[in-house]
Length: 435
Image (cartoon, rainbow, N blue to C red; front, top):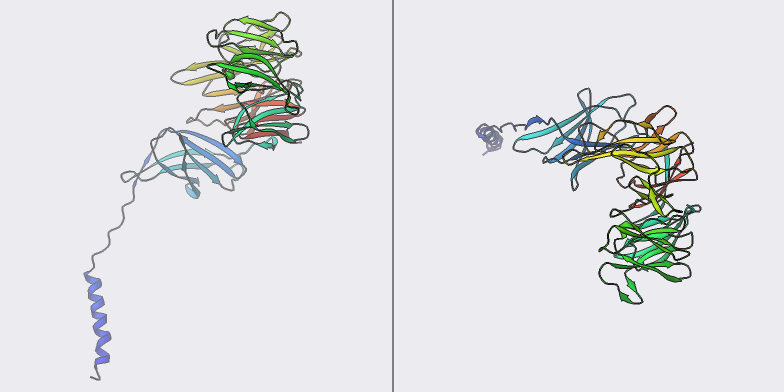
């Protein structure tokens, strides 16, 4: 019994050692195979000096990770999130100047295979020419208009299924709620800094039938209302109010006929022609294709002899320059366009056609100098183009990107008093040039 304490640890050692010998070896896990994708539609958007957004479109692959490499060495990574038509990743990284990186998009393993797509020699540079200031946040913008003085914006915010009519004083930045339960915010036109015109679907308590809508002149402060016109509910086709006039589409049984209303005198002139498409809401004129309106003759005319496929976007009656672009839509390749600037009636500048490009000029541009501001956005592609504000220098005919901005709602910009008032889906912003 004295030797029992000696044999117990020896027995346990032999038992454990025997069990270890009998356990089969664990097989090594096989790594998935790597297959490189040759093509992928992507977009890059620098968000700051240390942020980059990358989006991959129209792919059946399940992208999981974005990795940044330098000379074959992995430096950092981030995850993708799946959006409606894309995968998006935002990479936060201390990019160095004049350094070229490789960006590697990687999928989840699919049948023991990981797919990769590489963007080589990426050099990060965030261009910022403007200081952004949010003047007001908006949940859902249904319609807006800027007053003829350029000092006031009336807009409707759709919150919890309710139209809320608001007024923004551009000079002071003050926002005033005018009506917390507005009747219909789908059509707002500013007559002045004090009055608006809106489209009503009810009149004296009764609902209007079918295609009918009543145009109501409203003083939001006093509540005074005046019926201006019975019109159609095609609210997309109403012009802005220019020189006291407004173009109003008549009911659908006569879609190519508009009424020209003079709001102060109440006179109405019937205009006939091919006006089935919405009139663009520029600040200074009525535009219909390549024509502008002669308020004395009450008719449209072409102020310039444009080339084929050209569209007049802004005609400056007081200066030498006018803005246009050439646009062709191919059902297989999408839009292709080029910038065109006319000077004193002649083509002064144009660049080359570029597939997948959308050109947007400010609704009220500043053409007082030799610089033209415009916004360009691009379809996703294997070749990288950047969305943002571009500046065309007319003195040397050079175009350069000055501000990265990938907001798809940059459509309603007004250059007023040294700033850009940018009305977007989620808010109204003031953009001022850095000194």
